[in-house]
Image (tube, rainbow over the protein chains, first blue to last red):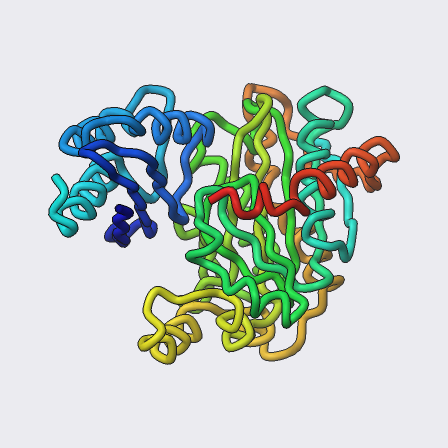
Length: 95
Length: 264
């Protein structure tokens, strides 16, 4: 199943997460929005790394993946991404 | 500070984005000095930020019906409806006074040129981090930056006029029931030079003001590094044959393709 959640970061940008889950695992994931991430490729590498994880590990792993050194975010933080992913899964009662 | 200056006038969205990237490659390869480019959009276009979902942000069918192009930028930030505006791009190697390592500082420095340009038009404006310029409490300019191949590319818009209804006939809103309220909110938060100046400001007048504003404001940053103070000199230029050819390739094979526009 696919779960989605939007979150407007107070004073920041809009996050839109979409996670496809199956058999307890993350099958696909996108973290979209009008934020900035430098370099962009490192953000996409972080997204890609989360695919295949058990859903219950997703939020914590996202927090570390998007706070890695060398990646700078503007308008959102790694905590915002982790909490929005968790919120999406919780709302669907997956995690 | 010597800068190459290009005014490429009207172009399609795919050409405009292709030329920005071609110019970035030129500067990165040392074939071009740092540069400022001014341009506009014909036909009107919507650009998506690099990380935005096309499906979530744009009514593609409506855009097609209205003859509005839909494109994805190489820069982050939000969706922009490009119609009555002047657009700029700046390319400079990292470490250039306009491209310090601190990204927010480089936004502030570049936007200081736009703010000064607005002042020449009689508009009091200020940079509003992360990436906006506001006047009379409303957004009049949005800006977006990336760093690639050791270079900064920043592009941004200065609104000449605002047509919020037309904008929202192609941009999707999170909640259709609240569309009316959202349109009113955007009208209250976004403005253009026509409203700010009380008269129509055309592309050419805005271009002259921007160029003068950048020349005036960026002197401050050209004194860095203990070098003797120097003025900001714009050297008028046009895209080279090679840059135009590269722009055409990027336009056809990247920015004009659904595989790029709809990658998210």
